Image (cartoon, rainbow, N blue to C red; front, side, top):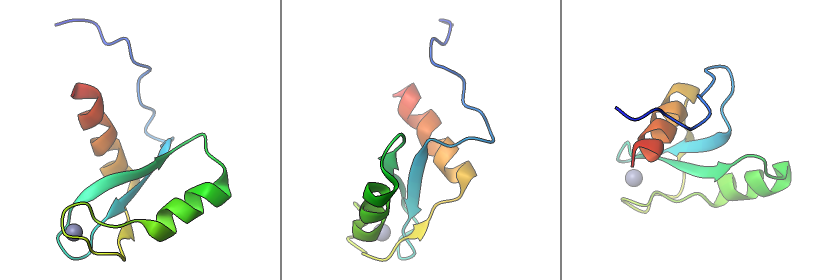
Length: 75
Ligand SMILES: [Zn+2]
């Protein structure tokens, strides 16, 4: 196994905003920090499910966001 060169994720700190579709359950990352709060709010407002096109997702939980970030880093 190769050593992980990424900075380990801290459970109390999530540097991304995730959304979770209320229609199909798909979760995805909407935006990454650091980002202007107003821009993050705009991204959240415009979030649309990439799977089914639903336009009113919930905010994903921190644990869901961590799961997505870990998945991304493994890719
Ligand atoms: Zn969906």
